[in-house]
Length: 300
Image (tube, rainbow, N blue to C red; front, side):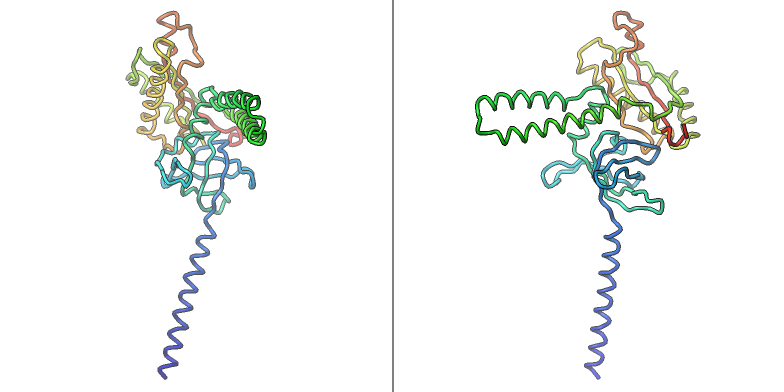
């Protein structure tokens, strides 16, 4: 009798463990990881171009964790905001597919160097291309001095070619606003050396916010500029702080971070007036805020 009870208890314990393992395996199987390059933002979703699955629609939520990972084993992590998820950024996404076959992101990881490259491309510069040119010169010197390193040189040349292709593709994405309709725009001007939003522009920004909320799948783009008066480093800093302050105002007044691109620090690029006059300098000290809608959503 005791042996029968023991055998029954053993069977029940084994069955319970098997059920737990089966359920755990199912949960794990539902989790998906994809790698690719962001090539579009539409409201609280973005599209990622992957090598194996093509374009994947990714859903961003308030619980989505965004991490800048460093090191060979990704041991160093830094939590970031959703606004850093810009076109051209290479990412690794962990999440689950919903009923619409969209990947709901739990965590999104990227490398800080990739973010810097994407940011520089958005600002109209291509440091990776400059690095590639420097590598070519170094390779040429190595070929003259060390003929025995031909294999290493070939590997470096392949890396340069890949970098150039990536730069060309990213520049094309940022250079073409043809995929979007611009449905609203506000320009905020700043005093010399100042980054605070003047009261006269706040009602205009509030009106833009209200209009954006009526548009399906809208995305807000913020770009800050500076006049060429002063050092390049100072002007870059001013354009960054101006764009950040306008972005903070938009968020505080109802625009979620899921619907905003990272504020672009454009420095002294794309001047709209000559900096030889006070009036021209005033026009160049600006932040441009635009409501964008993908033409695929608008049907145009």
